[in-house]
Amino acid sequence: MAPVFSVSEAPPHVSKGPVKGFACKLLGLSGWQWRPAPSEISGSTPEQAAMSQMKIKAVQIGGNAALLSSCTHGDAVDWGNDCFDTWTCVGEAIVTR
Image 1 (tube, rainbow, N blue to C red):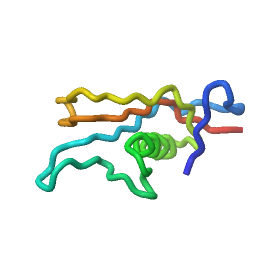
Image 2 (image 1 turned 45 degrees about the vertical axis):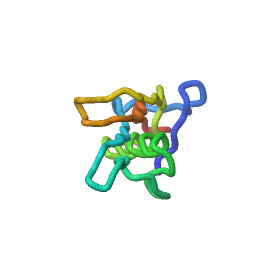
Image 3 (image 1 turned 180 degrees about the horizontal axis):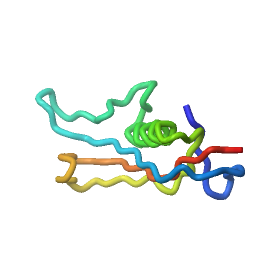
């Protein structure tokens, strides 16, 4: 999967555009569930899952890495996404030289 760099440690690169990863806790028929579900592949925590989603989107738009701007926890209800708890990671897809 694509590596993630902080702005201060980023190698020389070309920007491909902004990317965002999102993990959402919702109430389903079988109780509370995170989407994507925590796993070895998506990330063992909701924050790691949001980071994985950001990395995937970076690759989908032609990047081979990402610059992380922020990962934030939203513990208020997000009615727009029907989420009761969220993690959002925001960054920039880049191509390293």
